[in-house]
Structure formats: C-alpha cells, structure tokens
Amino acid sequence: MKILVSDGIEKIGEEILISAGFEVVNKKLSPEELLEQISEFNAIIVRSATKVTKAVIDAGINLKAIARGGVGLDNIDTVYAKEKGIPVLNTPGASSISVAELAIAHMFALSRFLHLSNTEMRQGKWPKKEYAKGIELTGKTLGLLGFGNIGREVAKRALGLGMKVIAFDPFVVKTDMSMDLTSKEAVIRNSDYISLHLPFIKSEGASIAAKEFTQMKKGVILINCARGGVVSESDLLNALNNGTVGGAAMDVFLNEPPTDAQSALINHPKVSVTPHIGASTVEAQDRVGEEIANKVVNTLNNL
Image (cartoon, rainbow, N blue to C red):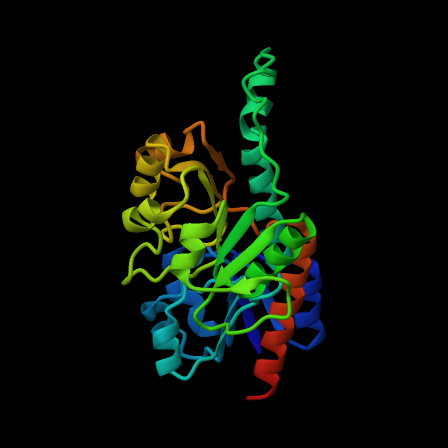
C-alpha cells in the first residue's frame, strides 16, 4: 500500500510505516497537486497545513485511512469521511504534556511580567520598580474549561504548584485528583486563572465572549492554548482595556498567521503570545509520529 505524508512526520514514524511494508511518499503538495495525485494513495497523513476536503476525499478513490498527527481535526472533513466509510485517525494524547507545560509557562510569564521585561531589558531599560508587583500562583484558583487529556496534565502541574483547581467538562463526571468538578459558570466566576482546553465549533462561535467576561473576577488571567476562535478576540481586547482581564496568553488565533487586524491584541502589554507551538517539542513530535504511524499500520492491516 502507498501512503502520502503531506506535512512531514518524525523519523520514527516513517520507519514504522516502512518496516510494515508500506511505500511512503513524504512530499508537500499544493491543493491542486493533492487533488491530482491523491488517487494514487491508500492513506494520507497530515498535520494542520494540508486540508482534506470533500473534494480531496472524492478524488481519493483508493483512500482507506485519513490520519492527522495532532489533536484537532479542523482541517479534515470528518463528517464526509465517515459517510464514505473512511476512518479518520488522530493522536489526542501524544502532545498533552507539551501543551500543558506551555499553558503553565504562560501563567508564569503573565504573573511575573516576563513577556515585557525580557524585551525591555534588551532595550537597555531596568524596569525593576515597574514590575515589582508580580503575583504567585501558589494559593490561587485555576479554572479549567475542558478536562480531557491536556486539561488533566495542566491540573497535575497546577496542583503541584499549590494551586486550587476546579474544572468543567460536560463529558467528565468524576476525577481521582484533589480538585473539584463543577459548572462552567462556577469556573468562570471563581477562578483567578482560566485555562481553555475546548474544541472550536465554528457553527457555535466563541465559547468565551462578552457575556462570559462580565462574569469573571476582575483581573483574571486567561490562557488559550486550545483553538483560535474559542475566545472572541474583539471581546477579549475590550476586556483587557477595561481591566476585567488582567492578562491573557494566546498560542492560537482565529487567523494563523494573524492579520494586521489582530495586531492590537497581539501587541497589547497585558498579552503573552506564542505562534501555535503548544505541541512543538522534540518529545511530543516523536510521540505523535510514533502513535499516528502505528494507528495507520493497524488500520490498514485490519481492513
């Protein structure tokens, strides 16, 4: 069988596919090239760049599996793939630790003004007095919206830092951790820090918008390492400007790369930003490559 790896894969993943006897074509194709060539392949492995649309699925007359190395499936028409009987595979747990650690890193950055002082000291400034009022994470309440693989990893680390952790997830009713599962409203109202680990459902719009911001503690710190669109960026900017939100960290954006229209938010002094690197660690990429390769092998071998 022939497999197209469109957005790259770690060496360990490619070795697993080859060892299983598959022909692997590791090549980035344009959308037009993908439509022309997809019929040659029995499976496609993508990351976030390649879009597996209805047209691609229709053209892939020999497709038996569609796989994404990562958590979200935004770039794959999963509904149509299911209608066509093509399994869609992903790696929901492989990058959980890396994303969780980045969320915690942003919490520290905003709490101690690291995002600002790093830049200003390189400009020859010594902002000791300006940033003398940092806050400790210990003793603060962290609210998690979404308590899947990543949310649980964030909770473990927050508990280790001495934080109180509360969480809401409509699909989780119990946990063995020393924390409370509660309602979305309770998380929003009672948290000093809120970390988002939710999917973005385009038809439903932002999960955190003007209404939710009015219910938050004044000075709350918001972390979004989930998906762009989960937070209304315009409402977040307003909340930062009126003091409702004391700081915000964003690894994901509605448009990636962001447009000029998002520059006011990205350059806001109360905002810490990274370019969608939550899963971008050596360890996570190895786990992603290994896991997605094994899933493809098992799926194709069990047809």
